[in-house]
Image 1 (cartoon, one colour):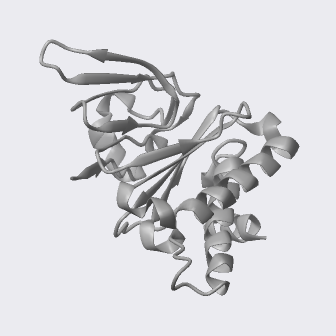
Image 2 (spheres, rainbow, N blue to C red):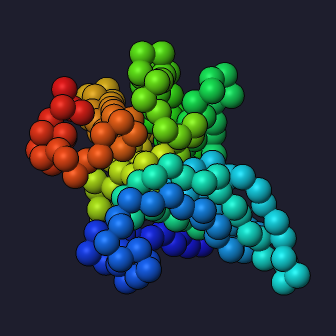
Length: 206
């Protein structure tokens, strides 16, 4: 079992996209080739899936809006399970290891409720019809938030009803709430480079 994900920073993205030169804001057509047992994710929803002659899968994503070059994120993994909301136009998905399913129920409920609230009030600022939330074991970059994608350290959002106190729920709500709001506003309506990091984090938490 493994998970592979890109981790772009502004200075390093130039090495991946050298032809962009001085233009940091572009639109992307992203496709990922992967084994059939893996799930591929990116900033936008899946547009099409094809199988090549080697029995490998090509997952093609919807063209992204114009965005900074370091906003792109691609993930391939075979250790996730998905739950999703079919009742709204804003699809919300949570991916996690299958053996943590019972401990992710509370996190998914929080994610869904916050997304529904934001959809009802601020849907007009969305630039993507889908948000993928991914719980990753031992995630080093705890602030990983991109357009359409939010990454969590798995241990930060797990709730075990048998051993965790009720106060643990407030910690999970705070972590998820800030990240969901941050992605909704700062990666959809406002380019985050225009905001001081402390200001954007404080506003999202508030």
